[in-house]
Structures are given as C-alpha cells and as structure tokens.
Length: 310
Image (tube, rainbow, N blue to C red; front, side, top):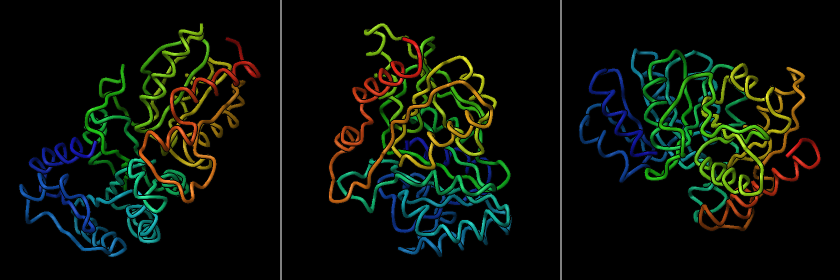
C-alpha cells in the first residue's frame, strides 16, 4: 500500500503546492518518488518523531498540508501527546501516515507491532482514522480525504500486490464496503487482514454457510448508519482485525450494536494477548493470533452455533 500511497501523493502534490512530506529517518525505498520530485517540499527531521509532529503542526498552521510518515508505533505512540496537543486540539490538517499496521514488521518484534494504534486514535474525537484494506483502496481513500478539514490518521500496509476480491478500490467516508454478499453471517474486516476474511467466507460456503464480507476502512468517526444497515440483517457479526481486542474494530462494532440495541451477536477475531518474546512473519503472527482464515472459520461457526443460525 505504501508505494500506492506515495505515488498518489505525488500526483496530488503536482496539483497542490501546499502538500509536504516529512519523515523521521524512515521510509526509504518507498518515499523516494516524492523526495526526488519535490526536494524542497520533503523534510527528514531525523529520529525525532515528537519534533516531526511539532514541525508539521506549525506548517499546517501556516497554510500547508503536511504528511508525516513513519512505522505505526513511531507515527502514533511515540508522538501521541504532540498529535493531541497540536493538530487535534487546533483542528489542523496534519496527515499522519502509519505504515505496517498489525504484524507487517513481524520479524522486528513487539516494539514494531502496530496493534493498538486505532484504539489510541479513537479516543480523540477530533481526528479521522482511515485504514485501507489493499493498495487500490489506499489510492481511492487518499484521493477522497487528503483535503478534508482537520487531521487524518492513515493506517496503511506495505503490500502493493494483494487485492481484496470484490473491493475494486471502493472507498467512501463514513461508509462500509460490501465485497461479498451473504445471508447467514457477516464478517467485518479492517486493514490488510481483509483477504483472510474473504478466504474464510469461501471456506464457509463449502460448509453450507453463506457469509457476507464487509470492509470497514473509514474507522473514526464510526460509520454508524452504514454499519447498522448491515448489522440489522444478520444474527451474527464476526470482526477481524490485526489489532488488540480492545479499542479497534471489534470495540467499534460492539458500541454500535449496544447503542442501537441491534439483536446481533458479536464475535471478535483480534490479538488477545501481549506477544512478548515472539517474532516471525506476518503469516506466522496471524496464525498465532487467530487471524488466519482457518481461525476465522472456526470462530464464525462457533458464534453461529451459540448465537445465530447456519
């Protein structure tokens, strides 16, 4: 997704000179198309993420639209106070780009996992959170949101090859996208783990369960009405996310269900324990955390057995 994001940003920057790109000494082999094309609009602040957000806040207050780029924990967690006190409190158009949501930097270990960022950002009412599911949706999401009022957090991945079947790059703010229609259960996915949800739906079909799959990329503010239009049609919803159990998509859906009193049982596929001392590929970490297609199938069948119909 990062290559698609940078290429789209270059295209937008060609049209609008307010667009800038900042990095904290990360992103090489990805950000060069922008840095080479607009050297006077690209800034490497060094390993100083707090300062990067401070600089971006000042630039935004001066009329620019700065994009700050780093790995998820360094884009969100390290400078969180600066994000809150700067672009959020002052309603400034700083765009925070966090790369590697979930376990995409799996071999680097726990410090590089991005599994709490959405929950952290969702605590703040003044920022939008966008988590595309593939590189095609990334392009559309950026084009639909780059000039919205206030700050935006983009949670993107590294994969620029895998696509979510049926998504075709669709994205709208405050809307969910249906990528596979169904009638028995709905699986809601966030981010680059969405292909596993689609694959799980195909396996469920072989077992006689017709699963609808939706992608939730417009995360915050919650796409309540769009979600409700789906949830009201199903007895069971299964959420899938490479994120801790608390604060992410599962929490969002639970809140929507509870506040609207929707008779829909919720089952969550998410990271349930702190993976201390465990590293490995993204696939390995998905399997270990119950986010692979086989685990999604098992969780869905269990939920249908206890709370819905198959």
